[in-house]
Image 1 (cartoon, rainbow, N blue to C red):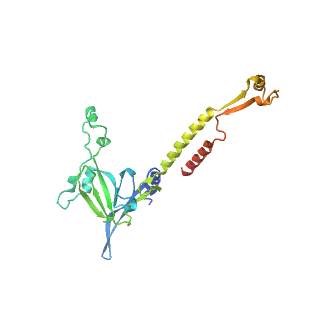
Image 2: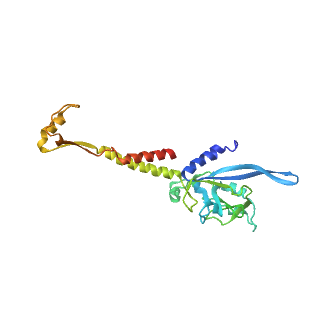
Image 3: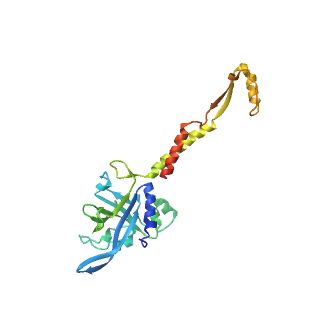
Amino acid sequence: IQKMNLAQDVLIPAAVNSMFGAAITRTDYYYDRLISVQDEVIKLGTPKVELIDDSNYVGDPSAKRRSDFAFEGDFYILPTEYAKDFFAGKDKFGNQIADYIKPDSRMLQEFNPREIVNRGLDRRLYGLREYTTFIDIYLRDEGTIITILPQGHAAKILREREWDGPGDGPYDYLGYNFMPESPIPIPPAWLWHDMDVTANIVVDKLRELVENQKDLITYTSENKEDVERAVNAPNTGVIRQDNPNSVNKLSLGGITNNSNWDYLNFILTQHTRQG
């Protein structure tokens, strides 16, 4: 595990991915030698765990839950020349597999403004190598992994090998909340976003109430002297009023006893607990 740097390369990024989508990993075995024990050949190698980005994951679109997937896989890219050597060999028709492997795009040879504008901005055109995209597909019923090219390339199986790992296949999938009959999880970050938007709306309404808050004094026309004495009196002062009921306080706006304040506290508490 120390050599694999599992925590930094897989566990921590997977935890982050699970908050914003799904945490998907692929476990595979890379054999590099054979030994013979009592006339039985045993393959030895190193297990490897890779983090698969959501956008590179392939699942069975006809299934309503992941346990019903007939297949799943992932996209990845390799340098074209390396891939031709890696998949070297012939198919059952005698054709060289390397002949099917073409670069996704040709690199620019002349970096002049006219050529760049005509082709549009594509980062793959400016690399030092040409790359090709591949798809590994795990066929659950057959227990095999096939490698194919994406749409737009030759419809060809470049490699097929048996999966000799756990029965659930090479992919592990972590999601927290799922809609019924759907294999795609609802990310916790969606809930955080909704709560944040709601809290901002409530805060805006409370701010308007505060900014519009007014305390007014009302009086009847025949009691003008009473209200003048009240307005001009100092704090804790003593004044005479001919008719105490003629001068009244009127409060407008404000958040006193406003239920929005309790709702805001609830939203912020939920956001803190889940975040």
